[in-house]
Image 1 (spheres, rainbow, N blue to C red):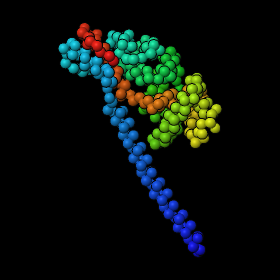
Image 2: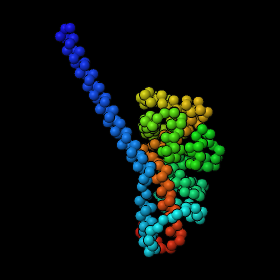
Image 3: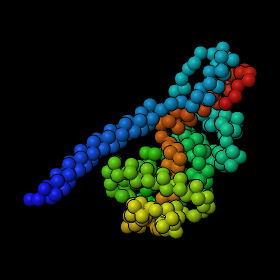
Image 4: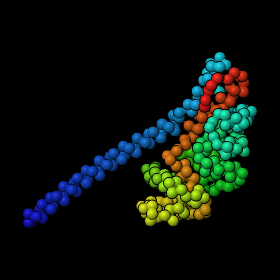
Length: 285
């Protein structure tokens, strides 16, 4: 073999070995990164943080009334839920739209309250909940077991993952990849200032070239097609797709346990205010 060919073959072999080493190391890094964020998700879901503003106000209320801290064993007093709804804008910084939504729905248990506390961070989700509250039969039977206790819409991350797994019939890693690309796409849509009435999937179809999203097209359209195969209409599939994207917009992610804890904090705060007269001075939530 000529010296030139030998040199070329040797260089190619080194390149090949270097590529294999890089791919192996990159895969190890990607796996470690994936496991790290999965662990963070697990911690957030199973060891939720309390709302620091509500915590602060509860402690100030206890101090103003010379009380020791205590635990509430049952969260089922309808008068307390009525008090929370009537004073929700004094407990939380919310828009008039969200305030009116609380007054319309009037959550009467911890689960319903936790759903609204999560959805308040997204006008799109809250609007969908209001629509479904007025029309409780507005639900597809395929996803009903997953969303029937959250006003027939996916509010929590656990629900989003269950729905994607159900529709695409895939593993946890592929679900993560799908949701990450979904989040990127939602940000692109926001930056493009497209009207909210435009479904994301239609936005994809209209902007394939400009967005350079050919690599993402298959999973999105595959999701819609899988929905249709499972008996969901195309319009329902588009709405479902939108709700999943909203859940991951700007990496806002709602875990059920976290919002249940916040709902219990709010219940405790309302209980103290209703039963003990003294209020702390100069407290800002």
